[in-house]
Length: 325
Image 1 (cartoon, rainbow, N blue to C red):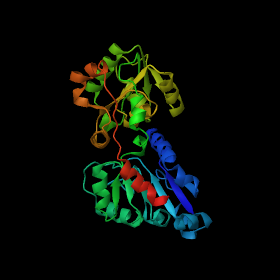
Image 2: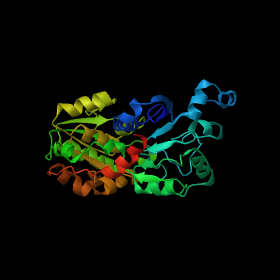
Image 3: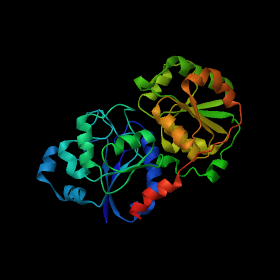
Image 4: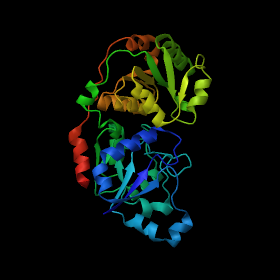
């Protein structure tokens, strides 16, 4: 059997995509290891128009592959599809390569906006109508099913390994050190509340690190006060190393930074700033605090004991995976 892994971590400016891809590799290992799998990118075009017209063995392989997995992240776009800033680069010329693709833990980019005609046309052309698609929240399930294909809400694959047994090993009480994150994209900034967040963390922890998840996060951090002595983390391997030293909490706006911390058995509190964290909380009970609650509740939560109780729907997860095993 042949397949394609459409890799959401190639050409990404957001290292959260690497967290997602690593989790999908582990959770789909039985499928990926038992089929010949070619890796292609979602964030950049793989073949030029001229290559598609001339064709070759690689394009022929892609057109006829048995499985084509789109590996997670928030790439279902109701309006930006085909544009330069679209998460998933789909164009009329590369439909044969993408045709019959299967979503694995995908989410939406544009929240509740209505899908435009062009996006609907392209998704109907490339999404498989043979297999159920795995999506990570109810909003994405409704969007995908509106295209006339089947979808199942499995939650994000980054959460699948956070079993009750795993969560019991995450400490309940405050640590001495903390890893934070801030979101530097223009539509995700809130200088006033993020400054309050920094001030509270500085008061409550001895050593503070920051996870730089995107190209814009460090610039934004540097615009806030009291950040001069915060140690910077730029890679997943370094992030993992700090997490595994122990005596550290995670608090921040970067959703998959918090999920990665929980994967490494670290107490985490994710600051919810959009529909993604809210969807994860609603479906999977991840620990969140809403941004407008920072001033009133954050310091109390930091100094309180709380349990991590992530909930996964393993019936849905296994139903999705069983299609390929």
